[in-house]
Length: 95
Image (cartoon, rainbow, N blue to C red):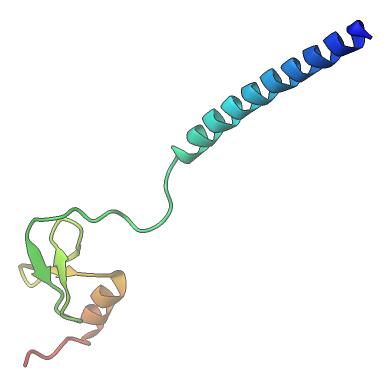
């Protein structure tokens, strides 16, 4: 009877240790997997000079804007679609 109790205690101890090692391994593995390339929109730096998109009129940071050299000037756009609209001649009318 004493042997059975010792075997049960040993089994509980081994299971507890095994669960701890598995938990540590899973945490390390998830951190390693999450440290890879991130998906989603790029981070926008705060501050810096703002430029107005000539198509839709929004202000975008010059450091992250999509640029187009046109007629000796650099134009800044919020998106590829606004840049393409500008190239096609769909410019915003200034009021």
